[in-house]
Length: 285
Image (cartoon, rainbow, N blue to C red; front, top):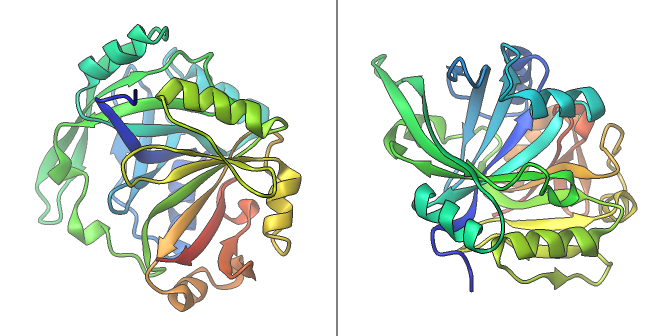
């Protein structure tokens, strides 16, 4: 039975070395980027968000080394920038944590935190969250997962921040490269109580729930065959690799990404080297 208090993908976390430089880079790719947020002293991190509907992308950087951000720092040291983890939307984090506990996964949290938000009228507000994690060791395909309950959606999904020159509307897929796609996909499916969906080329999809984006597990070779014109240098052999984004206008996406883009398999693509270790694939909405 599917989890009742955890629904599909909420946001993807792209870890970067230089937070401000990364934000400028994604602006050059046609994204509207939120003002910078700073997390608690315990978390020691800061972020910029790229708001879509019903999901978003988070650019995350370590500002101060803390015990909490040790896994993030370890990833940066081992593989460099890129997708470190993916959040699910939690209807109720406390109840969701108990649901995964009943399935044999000891949750980390729930934890409450907030970050200041400057609203479009200049007023200072706050975005408040309650999150919990699956055990850090349980990382299918090297991708950590957690769940996020939004207490103040109006300070996160701000309409002025949801309009992008590249036409980006929502996430369609999170791409995870793996040397054993079927095994890693099955691992995630067990963790979130979903079914796997094998694809003809050997890749394996895992729906995240509701009408949200799917996960796609595939080898680097399979990914290369799907998008043969795109250089994949910088991707790991195992880990979060890319995001498939629905755009309202492929021509606008191509114009916005400019020389960073390449056409492949009917999509507008940005190589990982141009997007902080993250392959971006724009497809028609």
